[in-house]
Image (tube, each protein chain N blue to C red):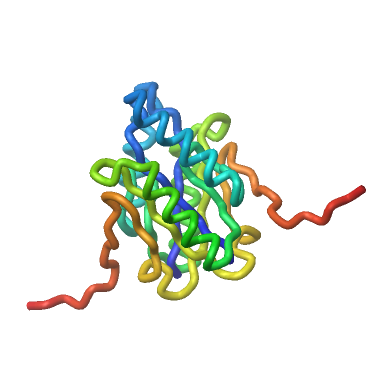
Length: 96
Length: 96
């Protein structure tokens, strides 16, 4: 399934920036970083449970906020973008 | 329809913070600010076109990124949250 993960963290502190780096590294293993703290993720239910566990270990649950939205089928192909935002291919055919 | 709008803007500058404030004010007219730069929006196609026009006038298209995702029906009710994130009611019945 296609998911969108948004991470609200205070990056004015070194600890906050460190947590964002860790969350980014984790999320990039499952998808793409499309904004500073927004990640498009492709995962099945099992992957998602593992991801949630790992996120829970990284974030400061008293300060940070993570929201994970389920997108409709082909949700990544139906994004309206403005400014520097660009669509990112997730399932582009491999051309050799 | 249910939409999710994410805004990537450099808030280390006063101009960036000003643009975020303007985008927030605009988006809050159509929905809820659920994170610092993430907005849950309920809009029909006509509202969305007006919103996109207004956003285009506010943002710096050479620096900022806005992504607008369409969520499935009841998408706001199916969010997984971690940390301080909380579900927000959009269509709660009015209790008198």
